[in-house]
Length: 198
Ligand SMILES: Nc1ncnc2c1ncn2[C@@H]1O[C@H](COP(=O)(O)OP(=O)(O)OP(=O)(O)O)[C@@H](O)[C@H]1O
Ligand SMILES: [Mg+2]
Image 1 (cartoon, rainbow, N blue to C red):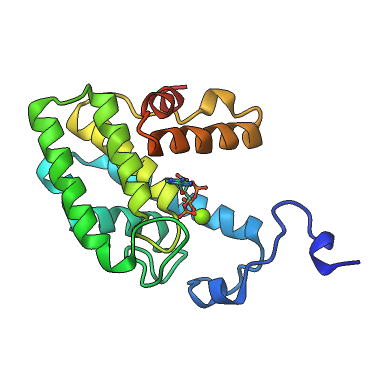
Image 2: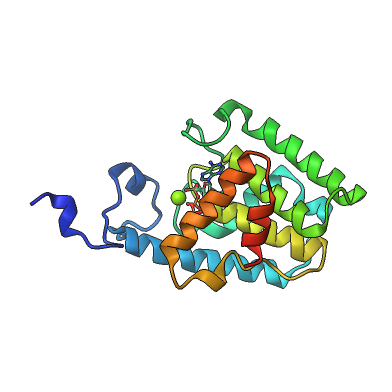
């Protein structure tokens, strides 16, 4: 039997390369990794709930990195640092900071001029962020938390549910989420907006 088939869901071993970047050397399976990441992210969420961030603070390169660091620093050594290699997703690694600065400027403008309703500003921000793909991993989760920070700290509105109502079928919900991201890539932000509040 192929080795891979002996692992059940969540038991997939992590790669050698991934292990290199781990803070906790005893993590050996994907399932364990998920748990540690989830715990770390939970502490980051609590951190966001304990304070009040202004838009001037949020819309900076420093803050974008800090959020990622808060989410993953107990698990990954590279938490809060931008990627240094290219991926099949995202901009060229040499363009990350420049593209982020453009996004932060754009978002600042949208907020000041009420270019879009609050939800749409937060979701456009999330979509552009994950399209840049600044970090080696955790970009999806980071972009969703950034969006939650914008909607709650800048606009004083409740955070997104990100499809929680459809969690009965995680796989389907995940597929639907990725479809809405692709629609947004094509310029149609509506499906992602609806998903975020579903
Ligand atoms: N075509 C696409 N365009 C833009 N972003 C995409 C596209 N396909 C996937 N993504 C985003 O990339 C993310 C995955 O990137 P990464 O693995 O760095 O993040 P993650 O936080 O580990 O993933 P997840 O979202 O599963 O928690 C997805 O969440 C999705 O938002
Ligand atoms: Mg990932």
